[in-house]
Length: 442
Image 1: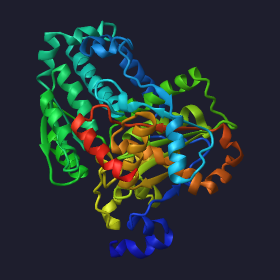
Image 2: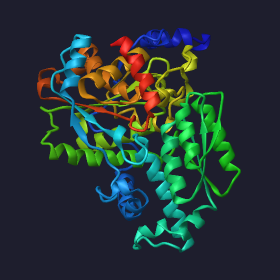
Image 3: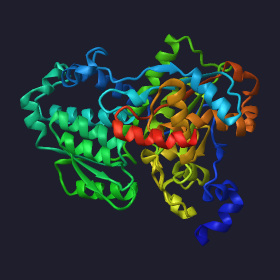
């Protein structure tokens, strides 16, 4: 740990010592409030995102035939995973009171991860903005027109760029190229080779960096600023990405109602979201708290080597502190979560919204991967398994949180929702590698 941080921070935040040693922690956010509010974002922006996605439904059905059945809706289902619940309880010696559900964003159409929400939305919104400004499109038009050769040629004048560890780049590359844009994805050394290969196969330009995610984002941002025809999708600061992710909360509310799953003072909802720079989980968390208020309890999950959001929220420094400042190397098999410095925008919004954060080891991720295959025949990429440890951490180490919020006697009526953030696009060869590694642990 750097000298200027070491003494004062260890005195003020005792869990930092555990984090620096790569020990797992459950950090409770004492700044969470009953009725959170922020001046940085509004639900009107979320509603606008939903309306935009509805306008694009006609185009999406033409561009992606797999969306015909859902009438152009990019959405995932919810499933109960009782066998996985039993496997977790047996493996870790913990009783998880309440039901365990999985939000299946690993199976989202088009790009198979939570990034299919915000990433695809921002690409579509940018396309709409350009088309409207050109006079070639009006909001009352049938957006199926965007699949024409005329619009392909129009969008080829423009470039979309993004910095990514993998899944965001995939969603933007696939959607951007489908519309006709030139796409440049700046990728960190943590990104998996198969994701780079798939992007190149789709026609995107992939620029690789030896540094981590932050270096890729910064370089991409600087290059985009020099090109007036280039739109940079900024995972650290984009409100459009945030809005696209937050749409999931409105849809989740309807899904839970359809399943007769109540959310109330006596039926608390716990949601566990894997977290990288923070945009995806932050958008979902914002929407959930706005809709469910104090009755939803949200925890972000991070690798022990990359707990950037935990670090930023705990210290209040947000992007002014990185995991390297506590001598962590930001090296993890959970490539989508390999981020050393959290988004300041998301961190500031989340200060009063989320319940806390927890960390997981790579060994735990692969153990969970094996358990899910054995118990539910369910495959998620390693980073998505970070969510599985939320109920474990809460029941083992979160009793003070449950007591403080008068939840200890309500857990039998609780719902635990694990957000599965990616996995369906992982190639068979990589799946076999992951599963072989998990077998040794299980």
